[in-house]
Image 1 (tube, rainbow, N blue to C red):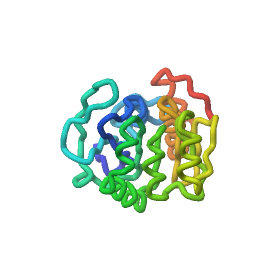
Image 2: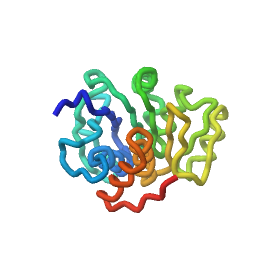
Image 3: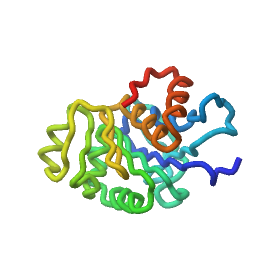
Image 4: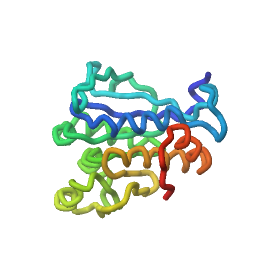
Length: 203
């Protein structure tokens, strides 16, 4: 298969990342197919994980994950996905990683976040003057910390064009299905949700 014909999704991972924040979207983009298709030859996305360094990542709960690439050697991305988790409280002070996110944002078709991954977009001003969401427990904190962002509560997904943010944890699945729908049509997204046996509430 010619992977250059696929949309490349790069999912950032880091220590203490929330597992479902990145595994949920990874599953969506990995199994996404045109309606009625099951074959790997009909894949719509090429999905990779990216970490700051080439080392095993310890996710929340102790799950160990080896990234496909580092921020220094990954292929060009069409979509960047930044998940959340306890690790974002540390990584929002990581200038090297934040600079990389900002650099990717200049070139990606879409920049997305799940849960408190929004912290990392906010730190470099990528959400300023935009509507955004995050985990319900962090909405007020983000309002106070990043006043230039219009935080939206009680929604699963906020689509601002180039930037898409989602609420906490499982909402990353909804956001990813929204991306499939936006890029490949609602029927492809519905088919993907059906293949996953996920009860997707279409926006």
